[in-house]
Length: 109
Image (cartoon, rainbow, N blue to C red):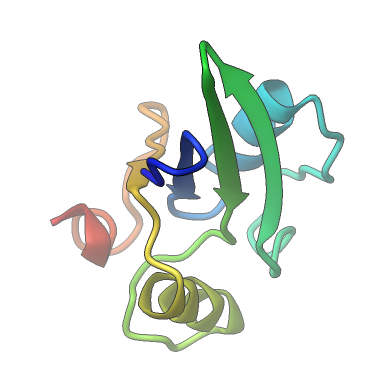
């Protein structure tokens, strides 16, 4: 949190197709594209909303399975965490999805 501006920076992180952008759109009143396939969101998107007296800066990160970058999406997520660490990382989980390779995301652990 930045005490000088009363702002909180939150990053939405998750595997692809887990609802990050839907939540982002709902909270920020945005209309970012969503889709039912991985790779829809390759770039990070930012928005904000007010909660009580705080400005919440929300970053919608692309879906990624790991922080050791293999895909372009994973590189974007890793670079963001290293260059602009958020105050909070909100890891979005879809209980209807079963991990497709060994138990979830690297950053779930």
